[in-house]
Amino acid sequence: MGIYDGLKDAASILKEAGKIDQYRQILEAQEKLLDMQKQIADLESDNQDLKDKLKTKESLTYENNAYWIEGEKKDGPFCSRCWDSERQIIRMQPCGNRAYASCPNCSNKSVKIDPHFESPFTPIDPRRNSTR
Image (spheres, one colour):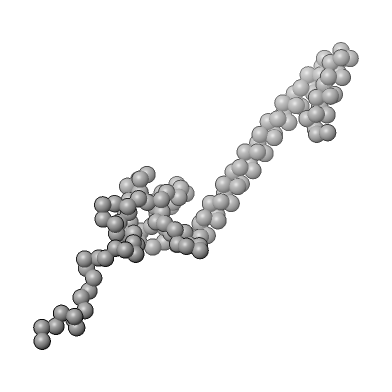
C-alpha cells in the first residue's frame, strides 16, 4: 500500500467518524503529495534531457561549420548555430549544390562532405595533361 492509498483510507475513516477538520487535513496532504509527485516526475524528465544532451555533446565533433556525431558511422551535418545557442540538434539539409548543406531552422550554411561529389576545383595531375 502506497502513501496515497494510506491517506485515502485515513480520509474515508475520518469522514465516516465525522472528524471534518482532520478529514480536510488529509485531503490537503493528498493534494501536496500529488504536487510533489508531479515535481519529481518533471525533475526526472529534466534530468534525462540533460543526460541525453551531455551524451550528445560528448559525441559531437566540429568540422566545416557543422557538427557531426561520431559513432559506428559518422552522422551529420548538424547545425552549429542551433546547437551552440539553443542546444538543439538540427539536421542540415542539402542545398542545390550537393557539397553544401543548410539548416532548415536558422538557414546557417555548411560545407557537406559528399563522397560522390567531385569538386570542379580538383587539382589536375600535370603528368596527365602533358603536351609532349
